[in-house]
Image 1 (tube, rainbow, N blue to C red):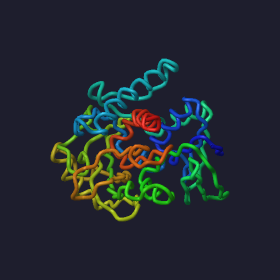
Image 2 (cartoon, helix red, strand yellow):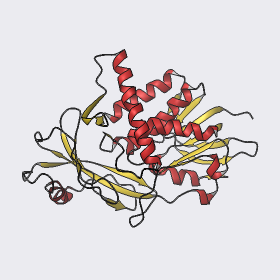
Image 3 (spheres, rainbow, N blue to C red):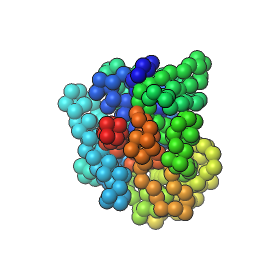
Image 4 (tube, helix red, strand yellow):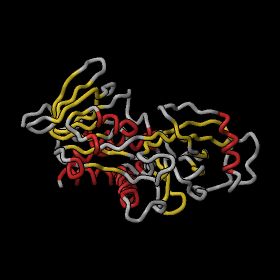
Length: 324
């Protein structure tokens, strides 16, 4: 089977970059195609940046297993970097060795650097328009952008985050009944003026669609609160400052002394859900050939929290499902 490129990864978020890194480290020729102008412009950079301990997820779920595995891999990744560059500060543990915070963009830059050092290439402004599963094996993919092109590959990784289900539907030959519906669950964040009287991350009792409006301390010490839960029909990152009323009420349930006027609008993110508002929360869906019957294809659906924590473990799992 002749192809232009061995492996194509769609999506340059934290999971796509982690997978590209693992494939390139294994000696594969890798191209990462990203529709946006740079790495991590979607869910990967619009989250709490917490390294989760893995205590919130069902014990037999992928979220639990890959969160715990990914947490250990992530701390070891940071420790290895510090051994090479002692002045480099990668992560900061706040509660225990199991929970901490991370600079998500710096992490993605590190993954990108690792992948490129092993020969991977990244292209931006390159959206996938359509594709086909080839009868002889592999894939033929049509890309748009300033320089439209068609490329063939042996392995295709769909790590397109929010857009993964829609992207899979544009590829002829993928069974449509193997593609889950997508739901968009928006979360807003507000920042605190001044310093918080806490030295630890504070989490309320988890809610159905998320972990509740929790307090996170950034690496620089700035406190932020979020995310809340807002189901939306289309991708929209606008932050409505009127949601502050909901935040004051939520935060004062565990910090009654929060002063009036202390919260300022921060940013929003969107969770890539594959279960709806009134359904049980879905697990990660890492759909390899065993689930859809297409050799060389892995679709990653519903990679919401703890996807950042689990990114290195998700990469391991993806390669294992390709090899199965």
